Image (cartoon, rainbow, N blue to C red):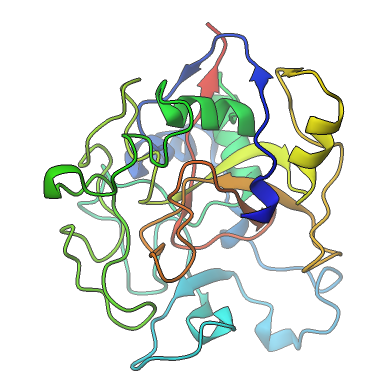
Length: 283
């Protein structure tokens, strides 16, 4: 994909990475210890959304809401809806719950929520370069964290979308939505779900020309942390951070960003029910 080119080299110091995405139970421990309120749980401020009618300024978040039939794939608003009361405790909106789902990755997490948890845990979010290095598991240039075959020997290696996106999910991999962490094989570094399941926040600002700028310098960057600011030509006024790994909503026909070299992006105050994170720390 254009924003993932050109291929270039970086140098990284050692780091530790969480084996799995941060789970509901881990995030609940953080909230219990700190009283933290996520972005989705806060009432939007009128000054931040001057064109919104007051009745729309309610706490909530965006939830995947599949249509009943095939639709053109040129407008994501056909399958996303802002729902009152959607947050990490109620990932699909009011009436949903995480009871009995302690081992699933926490979702409905905005960038600052992920940063707050990481700081409390004595960790931080990975840089984009760290994330990709870890995801590759030592397989330089491979398509996926486990190699070049999507289903080696017919085995499902990641939680992704099967069927016709966005209206038909056949769940051939065993899951129609988020899967508990660690249900799919780890890569060679012992890391689970580096493809699929939920998108993961990285610390870098997003720009489509990040790699082009890095390659122009002619030498590998050491511990790159990304550009100093964000710019997305599709939404120039929205500050965005990098997301990596794809999610259970990624399919071959739409997104396909479970491919390890691809990049995602997210507006920093936005969360959905397929965005989570994992942390790193210095050795």
